[in-house]
Image (cartoon, rainbow, N blue to C red; front, side, top):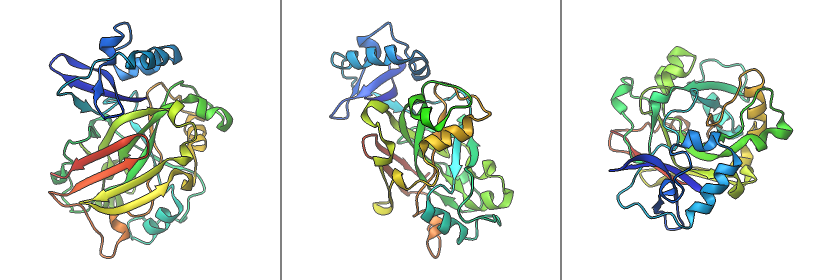
Length: 291
């Protein structure tokens, strides 16, 4: 299923996208289910099975507004930097790497974005919040945790995944370089577009087969298989959960492939009026204008 959070005149609740891309009201078809995504995830496999069964009789919602699938995760969104080989090389050669010793990191580079950065598909990225003029995009696959835990092994990691979504790790490059630690360059309001849906793991049992493509104003900039990750999905879950308890609904953005704005000479920074479109096979399209 492609699960969504949506709103209409009746309020905000969970739904699913059908084959035609229409929003189906799962909450209307199965009133006993939680009405929010975190509640559904925490309710476990039985609730997900009930939601799947309800989909066939769920009514289409006319005029539904799709929101970020998890507008407020239990924690900041975990993000991973320099996690594709070719992107690690382009970042090291860009001059924005802040003097890092290793082109390819020996361990995952983990930072975070606050929930105030999260916006839905179609909502504007606020370019004026970056006064330095170094606005950039990063298309990424994101993991949504289902069963939580601490000390999760690589062998067990995929059983803890609820599904996958898309994130644009929007970055103010000059701020990222200035502050060395990346939160102030990447955690600004509107700098974490997320969505449009969560693809449940039954439809993506092997995330390495997913393909990510990013366009800016119709120009293809990124095109990669998730199989190209330096640290794969199980490795990231093991590394983060080693001493941080993961909870249902936690989100981990896995990193971006080659083709970001700073990889060009001169850099192709985003400008007001631009549009960033990120597509991952099976999940859908996350598209946001730059305002």
